[in-house]
Length: 287
Image (tube, rainbow, N blue to C red):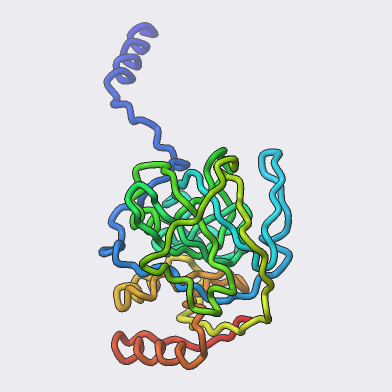
């Protein structure tokens, strides 16, 4: 009888279909991404206050020490770009903001948080402007980790790819000349500088701070509520997608858009969303 039971149990185990394990750590795209991501506008550079501590203090990863740049130090580098998606979507970034893989953001090991950079794919000449709000990547040779949308617009979703990264300084933002002129040539990199080694062209000084106006659309106990409203706002106005961010504050997930250059522009945006899409927003001042 024991032999018969053993045979029956063995037979059951051999006929049961095997299911390959699913790794929750595997990164990649999410199913059913928002439409027209290629039309998402680049991040709009604005002067934002940068605190010395927090994500801008020296840190160590994998036995290597990193010292974030301070002040308005220009930066130009070339190396490999990677991108990150669903594994980190909805999780806090180094800045404290929640990562949105569909916004025009990126992670960098040493650029100030927040700051802005122009990223160029030399293979096809495509360029994007991203907002740096996270730290990484920490792989040898990689110099920037792009959001899904930024990688899509550069056509580097198939894997790591060579890029050129150039910081947009506060001086350029104040002067309004951060947009690439038609006759501008790419930054020149010294042949003896290895990929991953920053090249500092000049040194400038940050002159004063500017208050930033933000809109808040709601505060939710669960992230799903904030994400659902973010999707609704993006469908109403795709140009707002790079400005939308979820901030974990006071135990709530707060959906905000910004920064806007002025409170008047923020109010105008709030009025337009209310009249055209029935979406309410309140003005908040984040200095």
